[in-house]
Every structure is written in structure tokens, then in C-alpha cells.
Image 1 (cartoon, each protein chain N blue to C red):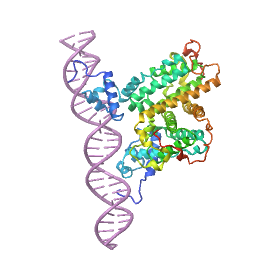
Image 2 (image 1 turned 180 degrees about the horizontal axis):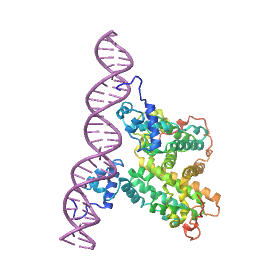
Image 3 (image 1 turned 90 degrees about the vertical axis):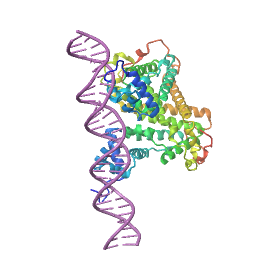
Image 4 (image 1 turned 135 degrees about the vertical axis):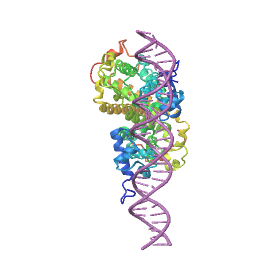
Length: 231
Length: 231
DNA sequence: TTGAACTGACTAACGCTGTTAAGTTAACAT
DNA sequence: ATGTTAACTTAACAGCGTTAGTCAGTTCAA
């Protein structure tokens, strides 16, 4: 079958199939041959549409990141940060297997820069110094990526009775596995709250005029408020 | 050369060589053949000492994690948490290439459990409810792993002039690359401070008796203070 | 209407990977 | 002296990402 009358493959189709395999079999479970087989096609056919496996993964990652929303910065830095962090984490939690790739991921993509700009602009407009705005953005990403990756709870095994008396402070850590997801979600929300609380306290300390977390005061264009100093 | 008079290989030697390759060439740069070549040995010889590549990596990861210190919990939960987080991050920053592996890593190892026990016990002894102690431990790990992995700053490319005017709020983000490491370190410290500040405020709120961050009051064995309730 | 150029697939193959099997001999225990 | 174990060797397998070369169907210009 040299050239079909109607194309068998399309970039979105390849992406969807790849993501499906990743979700089911993990990141290592995706191979070009397996992906091709799922599309009832030979492996090299994929290279007509994607020059490399990494490029394909980049595209899949970008697709996932499209669900990240920075719009809430219009309601104030606190709302913006919370909205961004939550939508970010939700996007990653939907496809946890791709997170290790996404973490080193591009970030230099256009959409990614647009998000970074919205975040930084929103923070600066609310009264945060540019340098701290950068650190807040980084910190929040740490939290989201760490939560998506680490999965603290999954570090415990549930078939071990041993450490129940060996490490009494762990109590019944073996039950963690059961509600691992819940613990992860709660821990993320907890960390986010503590972090934002600390931020709010700091903002009133360094810039008492700014209402901590409320709408940014003047209707000045958000992006214009960023001074051109190294951060 | 069937059996050498004195063994050519040893587990510590294999581990050291593996880590050296990982540090230089990245996690993907480590192959059993390359490792064997570095040790002037054939690849299958390694399998006499390590049953699998994953086991080898587990051991290397554990070796790195040995530098993580939870001793400061004797000085109070705040000092303990900060000391743990900083030594944890420092250990990962020394070998950033192995972090992606370490993040999914074992965690169920003996040493890992001992650390978890010390952390949880130290927090509970200072007045934190067990459930929140768990979340604090998880949150801190999120921060450390996220900081070690994400490398927010590395997400920017420095050869692009384009977005200077396209995304004005980003200012001169292209300079980020230069002091990427400094930004990472500062952002981590910033995040840690904000998080711990938020925690301290919460602790005085929920348990006013506990001095927020000071030494845990009575010299009671830390591990004995953990009630046996699900967390 | 013919012919060239392009498109979207194919099969074969390269060098790489982790790992297993089988062979070889030094060292050690009985 | 003999048998077992230890520590290596080479050969090989299946699977990986990717490249080269082939070929039929589609599109468009002359």
C-alpha cells in the first residue's frame, strides 16, 4: 500500500494515540513502533509527520499545557496565582506519566512565554518587585511540578508490616497508599495555602499600600509596570 | 581472561563510575556498555554485581540521599524543616542529572523510612497534628524536588531577541540564563521562607501553646508522640 | 492529455540498548 | 585431588530510534 487515497495519518491523530499509550503504559511504554502499530501503520511512516520522537512529545506536552489558565490574575495576584497553580496541577494530574518529560520540557514555546508574561505582569502590577515576581513564579512551578512528580505518598509500600514497630512515628503509613491521590491533592492545597499566606504577609510588610491579594489597584496596563532591571 | 586474580569490579566502584557518567553525560548518557568500558570490562560483567540497571541506579540514588540530614529537628520543627530541606536540595543540586530518576525513586528503602520517621516525629512533637505533619513533609518534598527538577530559569532561551518586545513584562528574561543557578537557589530559599512563614502563622493559630518554630518542649522521645490514627 | 513533481506510505537495515546464555579459568573448601 | 563457586569472557536476542531507498497515487503545468 504505497499511497492511500485518503491519508492514514495526521498530526493530531498521532498525538492523541501517543498520549493514550503514555497514559496507559507510561512514558517508557511509548515506542514509535508501538505507536505505529496502534495506528495500523509502519513505524517510519510517523517520521513523515514528525521529524523525531522528541518533537512529537514536545507537541503532546504543549497540548496538555494549553489547559493551564492564567486568566485569574485579572482578579488580583492571589487569585491569579491560585488559579494558575491549580489549573497547572490539574493539567499534569490528568496525565501524570508525561510529567517527567514535561518538567525538562520546552518552556521556550510561544504559549509558554505568554503564560510567563501574564504571571509576571500580574504580580508586578499588584505591587510585587520584579525580582520577587520571578521568584514567586519559579516557586509556584516548583510546587506544582514537585507535587505532580514526587508523589510523596507513593513512596510508601503497603505490603510491609515491618516498619510499623520499627518506626513508630510513621504509625500506619501503609494505609497511605489507599488514599494516595487524596493525600497528594490535600498536600498540594496545603502547601499552596501556606505559601500564599506567607506571601501575603510579606507583601503587606514590604508594600503596605497594596491590598494583599486584592485586585491590582490602578488600571495601568499590566505589562507596562515591569521595570527593565535584571531579575 | 576468565577469572582475575584480584577482582576488577566492586559495587562501590561500579556506583562511582556510574555517577560520574551520569554527572557528565546525563541520565540517558549512561549505558551499561559505556559504564563497562569506563571500568575496562565487558558489559555483562556488571550483571554479576548488579542484577539490573535499575537496581544500580537505586543504589546510586540511595548513596546520594545519605547526605540528607534530618538532625536539626532536635532544635525545633522550624530548624528541622529548614535543615532537612536545604540538605535535601543541596544533595540533589550536586547531581542534578539523576533527579528525574530519584523523584520516582525507591523511598521505601530503610534509610528513607528512617528519615520520614524523624521528620514526622519532629513535627508532631512540636505540636503539629499528625495529618498536617504528613502534608508538611509532602509539601517540603514537593518544593525540593520541584526546584531540583524544574529549573524554571532554564526554561528561557538566551539567543532569542524576539520576545523582548513581544512580551514586555518579561523584560530581559534572556539574561536569566546567565545567573540561572543563582535564581534557582534564591527562588528555592524564597519559597521555603514563605512556606515556613505560612506554617508558623498557622501553628500559632491552631495551637497557640506551641512556640512557633522553637525547640519542642519536653524531652519526650519524638517518635512516641505520634498517635496511631490514619493520616 | 501527458508528464513532472510531490505526497504518503512501504520494506530493509544500521547502530544502539538492556539483558541472557554458555564457556573459561582462578580461587577456595573438603 | 577434586568439586564448587567466583568473576570474568564472547555471542546473541529482542527491541529501540532513525535513515535510505522504493513505489504508487495525487496534483498541477504545459
